[in-house]
Image 1 (cartoon, rainbow, N blue to C red):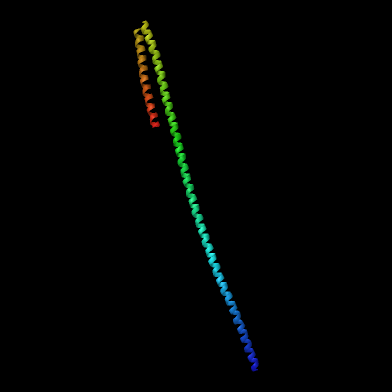
Image 2: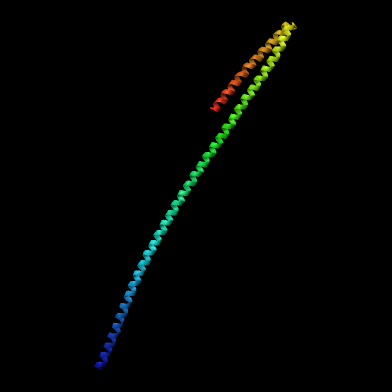
Length: 168
């Protein structure tokens, strides 16, 4: 019975020893797994950090692109505004030139009428076919034309001055 007890103890010791060895074998595996998990965690953190940097860089590029787009839109608006202003100035210049031309034509027309009436008056006066009443009417008419000529000359000067303002 002593031997049986000894065998049981020995058998327990052997089993205990096997367990300890199994635990010792398992411990390094657990440590290795823990180290491997730590390495994977570090790798994942590094990947996550790299992705965050890429995201930040992408956002910065997007902001820069948006800013550039807005600057381009602003520049396009300024160009359009300048174009419209130039068109308006060109239109005003053309109007002013037309007014000068119209005023000069009016002056020429009135001057032509005056010269025609003056010639009629001079011819009748030279031939002696002019009554006192007709003389008065012709002189009144010629005076009226002279006033119209003065007014037309003033209008020509005014329109030319307006044109000069636009040119300069």
